[in-house]
Length: 132
Image (cartoon, rainbow, N blue to C red; front, side, top):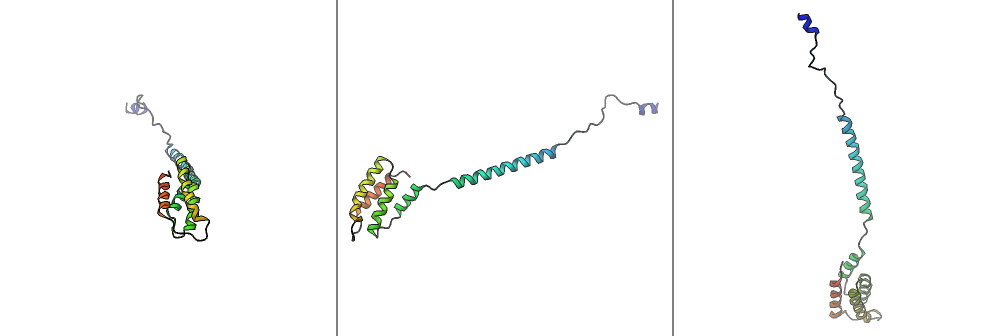
């Protein structure tokens, strides 16, 4: 009887089934996909940085703010140049034209006086009206 029980199989217990383990394959695929995404992101960011152009209006405004008033003739030409480049709206254009007309007396003479406070006040009004 003992021999008989050893040879008999139990019907409710099944054999061990081997489960395929694909976790290493998934890890490799996710790593490759992440690496490709990282490279694409780096390329995209570097291209955006290279494409970013400097804002000329901000540069012109900083040049206007840093004008040296010791040389009146040179100052008059610089203010005229940058105010023309910065004026976009009708109000800005009007203020720039008024300023340029006031500066004409400093441009075309050999010897000129110092720039008076009226012109400096118009320049500050013009700079306050700018939207940069």
